[in-house]
Amino acid sequence: QGSQWAGMGRSLYEQSATFRYTVGKCDDALKTAGSAVAVADEILGADAERMASTAVVQPVMVALQLGVVAVLAELGVTPTAVLGHSLGEIAAAATGGVLTVADAMRVAPHRGRLMQRATGRGAMAAVALPVAAVEAEFAEAGMLSVAADNARDACVVSGEPAAVDAAVAALKGRGVRCTRLKVDYAFHSHQLEGVLSELAAALGTVAVQGATIPVYSSVTGAVAGADAFTAAYWPRQVRGRVEFRAAMAALLVAGERHFVEVGPHPVLSM
Image (cartoon, rainbow, N blue to C red; front, side):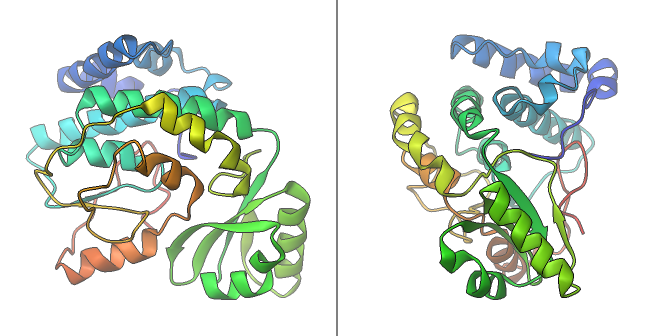
């Protein structure tokens, strides 16, 4: 989440029957799940305000990612492993065969609807420092969480706006590159704790299947185990740190060397 923009996927929807078919399957699943979001309408509507809504963006992003994966497969580009970053884990699990499209499109709207409650109360910032350095200075105060460990010298902090602004100011004063993200929420922080039990209850049972290709978890930073992506996994996934760096390291150890970022805008490739 964060790579979305109004109009994303529109030209692909208009030009690719495969993309339209995949989006249609996702819309059918959303309707069955009782969601009011219709992905095709959101793609064609290109409404910037709606693309700022977490409740709308999450199911739309998952459908878009699954559509792009289908188009890549049509072109002969198929994965030997998959990894999702935060919201991207839903599409990754479905791509790897662990979740059905129906369950993926049930997880996404519940996750988005409940995380929407956290908007307007938080802030996030990208920091060009190792996680350990950031934790030593800021996280121990309890006001900030490290939301994502993205690379050796790249992480994201999350928390109350005043705390994030103070951290950004202090770091910039020392010449550390950091950027306040254009969001008003503090995902992967203590601010999400109030929705975790409700998310588990809303999901009920999420049936998982054996992976057809290896799926790496950005919760554990390793190949997903048998308990990954069940209903109990998603509250932990929403609250905990995104262990993207560890999962990428595991992919490299496994011999992977070619990577495709699947989304409407490249945010992780660098």
